[in-house]
Length: 87
Image: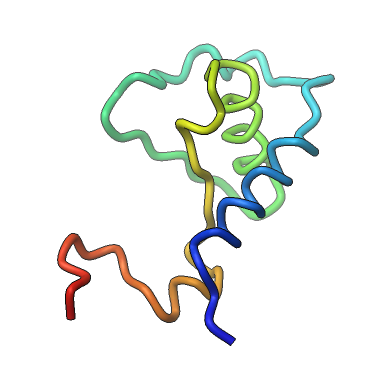
């Protein structure tokens, strides 16, 4: 079964819809979100994904302008992130 891009978008939309904003870490505002690249690291289960999804839901007016995916999704077994996907 080939994974398609639309399934990634549907998964993202479902995750955003189910992201709870009842508790947001105070440090979220200390992150330089406008930088070209940021790194967030930490042990499994500490809330890295939740932090990112909360930022998108809370601070980005149009959540269609963002896309959160994990690279362990089956889509990336069949597609890569190279700019030249014409092969």
